[in-house]
Image 1 (tube, rainbow, N blue to C red):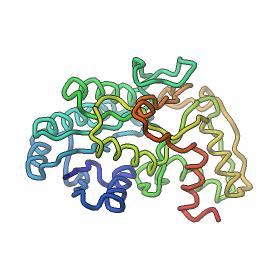
Image 2: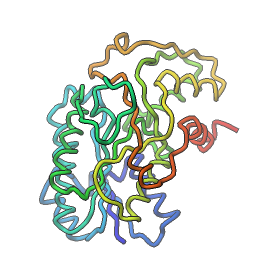
Image 3: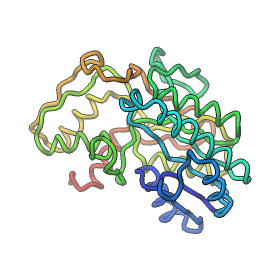
Image 4: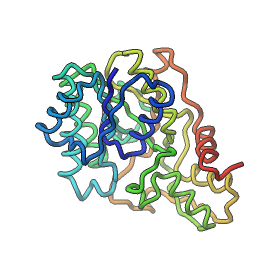
Length: 294
């Protein structure tokens, strides 16, 4: 099997590459950075895919700085929607399957229970709208493409280009905790942070078992808030700083966020896949791998 990973410098792409190398070394994996492939350029995408002849294309490329997306609407839709569609279409045209990563932010948060794969998207922000459009375009283009909704990614391969150089939300909080700095964090947005190692394992199982395409929700188990995650990190590392809860309205971010953004992983369960570990277990494992816990 030949697999191409788009967005090769990102934390999710690097996690995929490492997982295949460690557990499925017979799979030939080519990881492409933005310098190797601009997914918004149709001719370039087709030429690269024809040359590499992948069986599966994993598209991890995303413009995911949610507040920035409000100011950069054209870039948001060009990368997230148009680029996502191009990768899926070019994959289909050469006989390959593709995997695209979407977000819980396609929902408005008005539902009282976790969102299921069959719920109708209703985004509150530009980022969510660009991802929701990508989902529709990809599904129409190729119903056999996998569309994976997830959220709050953290992992060992964090990159310097996100969260102000901290890599991801968890590492951003960890940096503050190490400095014993006080931190304000939103306490009224329900989410489930997701460990990239757990996410990748489930996604690879979908690929290798050649499961049907469509939308899958894949997150760690349980639900929490950004405040509770930060408070947990401070407690685990013994920080003397304080985490102060604030409301979404008090934060007053440029982009609106859903109050409930928890995803129910129903399709995975229906396939008999193992439930991903609880987010607290995943968080501790991440911190242990970083060497900040005994």
